Length: 490
Image (cartoon, rainbow, N blue to C red; front, top):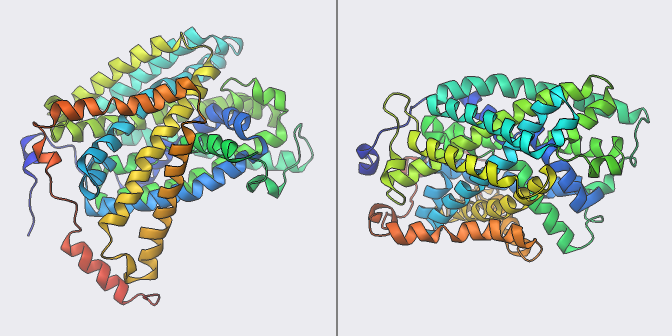
């Protein structure tokens, strides 16, 4: 027997079936934004980890895949645009659920500055490379791109999905071509850095626990964004299955790209060039691989990637706010969708306004490189927080099925559990190893989340008094049937 959620009936619904299964993968890749992440974050990662940068991506990528498995299984049990906000709230505790959702909201809002700046820098550098170091000009151009993407998100998920297909396909194609060219270039002996060594993937170059934690916070930022596919589960065809699977596939794709390009940067570019790249590393790498035109081509990839991830990040934050508003944990107006476009219109407008204010304020924080460095580290703390909670939530939600098969134990308990331990460690150890401004942004923004909890506690009885997450009987039955035919059943 199917039951309806009275809270959802009271408000407008989001547009169903706007995203296909393949589109879910595209969204996950676009959310992690490989070209943007590489150009904006590689210099920051190398400054923190040096030759251990590839290892940081590897040892963060494996737990991150466990988090992706957690999201996939939680999405099968509860299709909700709030994703971790809903799952953690029902499986663990409503307050933890709200804080998980709040962590995504504040990290995504902060990201608007970190994301718009490379878009502005890439656009400006197409016309004048020297002007790309002008923080004010870069911020203005980035803000224009952001507003264009906000309009696209406002107009509907189908428009967004079509745009993502075009942008992400071109971006990934260009990256794959240059990945091959980089391997050939380095193999031919044309490099200014050290030759690659497999020890770069081990723990020997971190210089202690502090170095590892700092690198892990940055590496988490690389991957962050793939879970946009889960925030789109209400708008994805067969979203209970494909939203989560899209995230898993997306993590694998971006992991390969991140590793190849991080190694290529260290091998091909001199250390001084990397240190002075100021969020422009792919352009420099492209020029080194293909002088005269390579940098311009990769600037296009960066621009497309940044525009795409601004769009997916807006989707994440607006869908999370929509779910919160629908549950009355923030003002109810956030939980209403536009009657024609079926999008969280009010949430989109509010986030656009707040982001513009942050764009203006960012000009007082220093250079583009300084802004990116502080934003990346503070977002890493918030990412670790809500990813850890989601990984714990899947183990609690599926506790009845964990030991029914080896497969269940590995993908529902062991791997997500490793992801949870890793993220908790990074969160706790990352705070004392961070600068005061990173702590203020990363932890302070999380603490602000208790204000709406206190204000809306009485109005949000439906959420704070909600029945804990239990697996639907059809899912339990299907799991038992699958496990009964699994040759690896314990």
